[in-house]
Image (cartoon, rainbow, N blue to C red; front, side, top):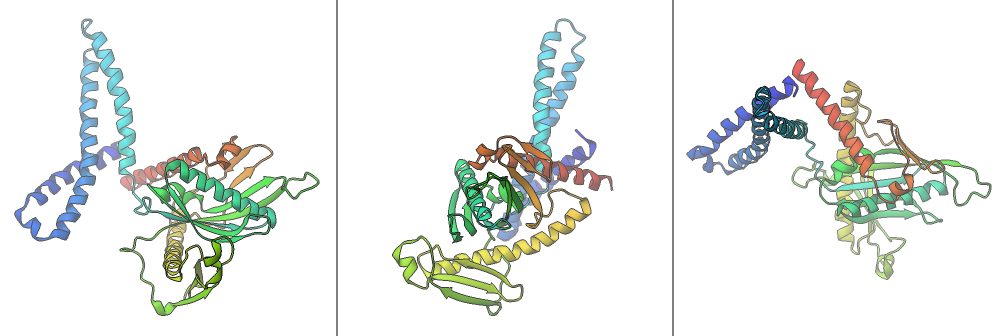
Length: 362
């Protein structure tokens, strides 16, 4: 293991000793907020420290086994121990590296996935529908729940724009790198000459704000409009002015919801989407600045960037940020996104680890 990682882990061991002392003090129960804060930190630090203690123990076992190799009577046992300890040390090192990486507190939160048709007319809208299907199928495979928040259906059955809320374990952490421009190359269903067309959609993935930590929006900065919903939803949804559109006047950011049966529920959902969009604007600006500083390929998640190409004639998906190419496009479009998500998360982890090493050397 690299020396700078050992130094970081040794700090965790020292901090655990400090936390054990602080939590043992009699006066700590008099300040419940401080007690809860220290308890949460203790749980996080002890998890790292315990894995590091195991790493140190297995490292000592490996050293002891290597010293036994010269003894003919103990050589077989030593070789078995060396193989066992070496395998476990590799696993422990990978775990500890992940545990040391900076954590995005939003990774565990639900997310809003916004898909908008771009260049390409009807074909772009159809591709937006294909992307929605891909994400909802992937969500189902992960045991997540999906709920359409708003939609604008195109004439041929695709979407001019659609927003879906996805709830489950680590949703935002898995999908946050989907933000950006998605380009498709294929022969459209409406093409009579068999020519390949290129179309595009934009995707934005927004973490649903934590109500306790969400930015506070001044009600006077909002314009709220109601209108009659369109599309599927039954008689009730089409006969009342239940759809809600909220505009944040200082930024011009707009959110709407028409999927619920009541104006009250639609207003609450639209306000959540609006808050998420405002926070994402701030997040993107900060991330773009950080990305420029460290030249990360996947840092900003700017939806104007072309991040991926879906080439149907070749059955190929290419993620341009990390030079990932997979020849399993049809299964990916059916929701098999795991290889893509894993590759993007691994790249981010490698970037963070490199940043930690640079920071430790500075």
